[in-house]
Length: 71
Image 1 (spheres, one colour):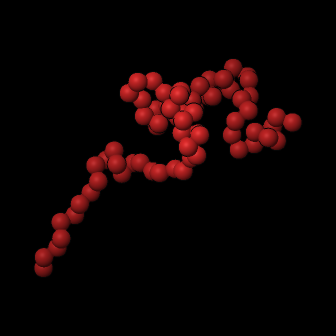
Image 2 (cartoon, rainbow, N blue to C red):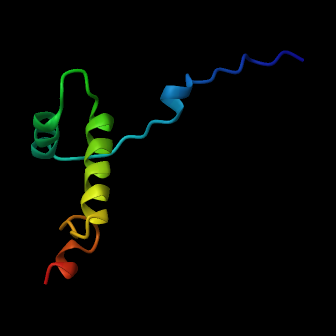
């Protein structure tokens, strides 16, 4: 029995997803980027920054409950 070859995406491609953001948000992300950084790099850097700020006892007004927490 002849089976077609199994094709797999390179690991880097398999681990990616697509998210929809507005063009305005994309431009904001781009403005925060450094030469050679991907959007993933920028977002990860922002997440790490938010974690450090939170560890210092300051609750950043970002996230799912931002509106409720800031009142």
